[in-house]
Image (cartoon, rainbow, N blue to C red; front, top):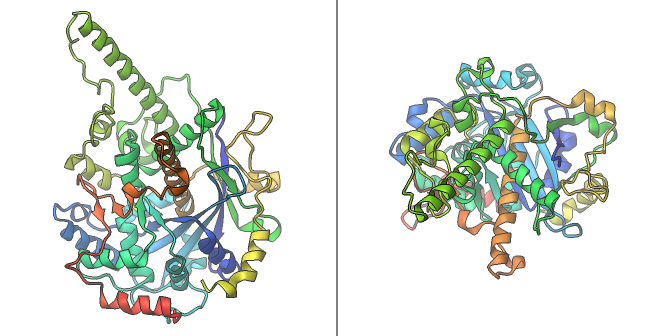
Length: 507
């Protein structure tokens, strides 16, 4: 069995933004849902971001969004294809390099993390797409070719928005491309509920409270979902299953594509010691200098083995108890698990919720997904849509389903030498992170459909994960932040003006 894949991520910068604008807009308008991710210049005081009061937390996030900037923005547009296998999605991924035109704070910790993962600051300052924060600064939000106008297209599309640990991302997006953040959290959530009527979904919340994986940082959750999907396909388990198609990029367009390799999860015979901190939270203070393994594939396989061993141990204990042998000493189901990971691990299937102790979630945000990323005018665009979609046929595209010869089809839409030249050993980018986020969401949706169909519900009437709609993960809290408009809160004045411009066609 193999689940290797190469994901094409289109690199967007000031030199090609205008050229790629029609494709970006069409991808947004024709998608079924959109996932976003950001790379940030910093987050500010981490303790303030974890204040007991959610209102105090929001104030700290606002301060970070107003004083820091977005360095890059990732878009992953998933479009469901009805003419192919059920649950097949055409995927387009974009990574936009941005440059804030105003002064902003850059934190050394964030810079170090980004540089270690291949972020090119020279490219950012020479080819970043410029933008100004706040309300209509640096030009009005008309139909020009700029980031604020692209964010307006996102709002007009009315698609479900998917993020991972997304509260901070949403605040930065609001401040950077929309308006000044409101002073109160209830006003902010009221604005968001208007801005994204199709709903906001947080895969951090989904991973912990619905999938209930052993760990919930982005790379772990993505690889675990991808591995489970690949195993189900290979074993012939009845569907539904997730199938992925990518656009074909040829000629001049192929020069903009950054091929991100996602190798298959493979078992290792070596007895490698895993870094417990990285295993639990996806982050280690020693970074690349850590002598222990940070291999997410190995961590997943060890977690599965640990869970399987614990199941066998509980079974033996139950059998001994029934036979009159009593309960064995030291029967903790967490035996052999990393100590820092225990509060975030799945226990018995009968448990209502995973443990959400404050200290665990505090670690999660302080040392979480990364220091920098926690984590239609229809008639007018018809010709553009036809033109762009002709360049995105799905025949021959990468698909996780097995081919007739029993092997997994690889991405065969580019010259081999281009793949060799452009493929990168790492996967961390805002664009690829957005892709991983979207994949988790699509896989979770399929699992939900499968469960509902087993309960006799009609699959065709299945909505997008209704139990997770507008629920944003809150570190250290047993309940999520509900993105709703309270009867006791009003939308901000700036937002009301913006929405009138959005739907009135003035933006």
